[in-house]
Amino acid sequence: MSGTTIKIRSSGGGEFDCYLALPAGDQKRPAVVLAAAVHGVDKDIRDLADEFAGHGYIAAAPDLFWRSIPGPLPGGDPRTQERSQPRLEKIKAGEADMADTLAHLRMLPQFNGRAATMGFCYGGPYAILGPKRLGYAAGISCHGSRMLDYIDDIQGVTAPVCIIWGDQDHAAPAEVLDAYRAVPARAPNVEVHIIPGVLHGYMMPWNTKAFSADTRAFSMGRALAILDGLSGGGDQLRRAS
Image (tube, rainbow, N blue to C red; front, side, top):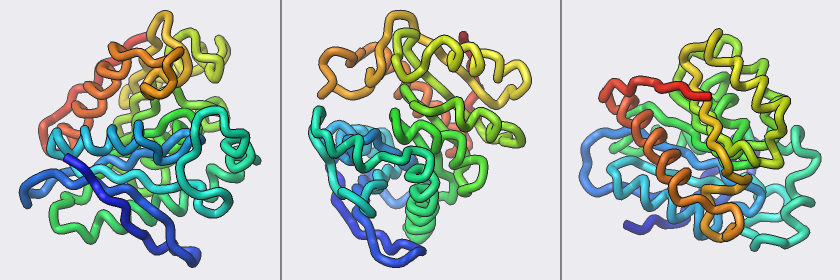
């Protein structure tokens, strides 16, 4: 099931591209909004969106880099780092895009009004920021980076949040993993999974060194369970360390 690239009007002016994959049928269902890594909405992200649509969920992947260097960039392109800096400032600007994407989804007749955000590397913090203040009903982070800058934002979030790393992730050193391991004890809505031997970027097949089919399958399983909960399926959070 293939999606298409649409234009979304920015609340701050202008418009940005968003890959949108819709499932078959007209029944109401939740959505997942994919917050890409610095490579942008590339084939791996589009394939993920199509996969979610194949499971019966609406999937959208906005271009969070449209203000600087838009579109997908191949691995190793030096512009990927250029357009993602300064990191915290760029992530803050992208909050508007994530909110505008959700507003666009609300216009779709198939949307049931509940969406999860699923972030990868650069996009990982939106797993927290989405439920915190952008109107999302859940958040999932896969090999998220700069996550320690957002750990305090978990306070007050009651929506399901799922955070997954490999224990060999260079973007999540020991102090980051230790800090997040402690979170579920005080926030039972948060699940943290740290997978032995897995590297940064495990979700993306283009990253042949880091890609882990088993960990990708596990992450998709957790995301689908959370989306099932947003459908009314009653997902039960499972926590691990």
